[in-house]
Image 1 (spheres, rainbow, N blue to C red):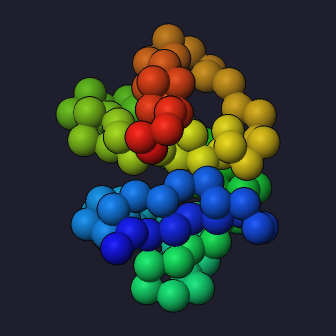
Image 2 (image 1 turned 135 degrees about the horizontal axis):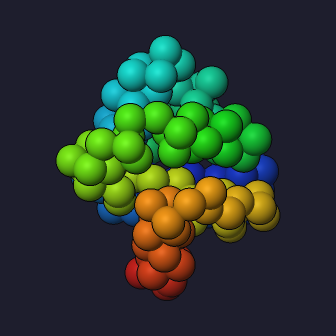
Length: 120
């Protein structure tokens, strides 16, 4: 089994079940830390393992995370690195232009580029 994340009719990510659950647990926790629910963060549940992505809302959520202590604090950044990398891949696949604001963010965008392959 797997999770499916899509934008419109296009699948932008389909991880294994446990990876999808872990990712969405992180999304829920990080959204709550920003006083957002999952919908405001760009995630709409269609079924337990089927999620629609709202690209503009996800982009705003990622921008908030990139401007917060998630990136400023080294340990927090390392713990959330994979989550942010996957979000950046999904935004890229959805056609949302996004560029790093500084060198700290540049590393996350390098991770995006490394993750965006057939195994993702």
